[in-house]
Structures are given as C-alpha cells and as structure tokens.
Image (tube, rainbow, N blue to C red; front, side, top):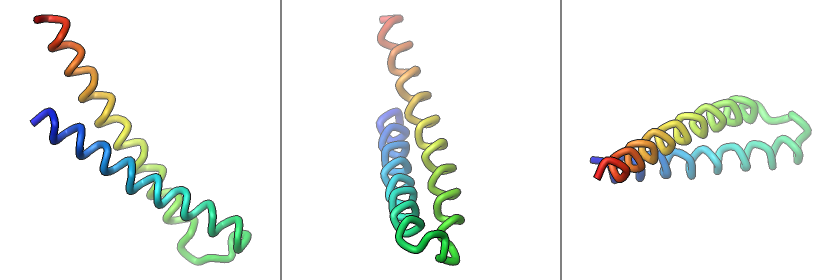
Length: 69
C-alpha cells in the first residue's frame, strides 16, 4: 500500500509537470493567445501540489516506521 501511494504521487507529479511546462511553453509562444492554456497551467499547479503532498506524506510515514524499528 505504501508503494502504491508513492507511485501515485510520482505519476501525478509527472503528469502535472507536463501540463505546467506545456502550458508555459505555449503561453510564451502565443503570448496568452490560447484559449485553455491558463486553465491547464492552474490544473498542473494544483496536481503538482497534490502530488508533492502525497509524496511528502509517504516519505514521512516511511521515515517514522524505520525510526521505530
């Protein structure tokens, strides 16, 4: 179960980073001319935050379990 949480967090961060960098690239290309680019950027930022929270929580759990052994 712990591995699934870590993998889920990593997948979320990867997908979110693709959305963020793609959005930034297109925003710079079109200078805010795209219709859904700001939405993708916001979604990517939210997913990045969630992914990092999942990863941080999973790492804290692993550290706590190793320190009690």
